[in-house]
Image 1 (tube, rainbow, N blue to C red):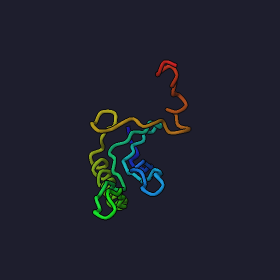
Image 2 (cartoon, rainbow, N blue to C red):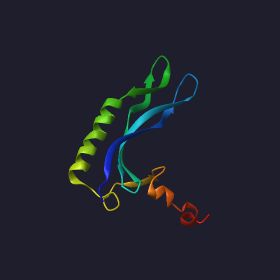
Image 3 (tube, rainbow, N blue to C red):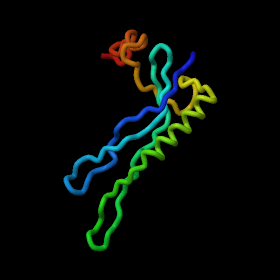
Image 4 (cartoon, one colour):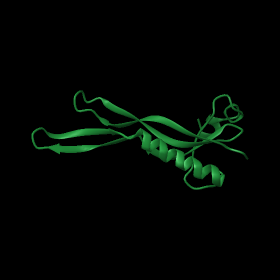
Amino acid sequence: MAYRYVVGSELYRAGVTEECHDDYNAVAYFVLAEAPDGKTYSKGFFPGCESGVYYDPDFGSRNYFKDRREEARAEAEALLNDVESSEEDPTKADGWTFLRNAYGSEAYANDDFYAEYGY
């Protein structure tokens, strides 16, 4: 089965801001493999934000968020190159997780979610 491999991205919660205690959302990158029938698998998770807490003697502990999207995307692209060259089968190789059936695909149309999960 010939898979189509691409780098995907999504938002994730990297932490909480100090000022308003709002969620700080960042971008993460990963590799997607889509089968011809529409089943989609993912591998890897490369966060685009470095977050943590540092201590300032004058102001106490503070959260920090460092942008690292370029490095994260480069790591995901390197994994993509490795996966494409090895032509892994996501249903058999380690590290792959079933993500979803692509909307409008054959797998989506034939997905019997209720029967599979007992609803």
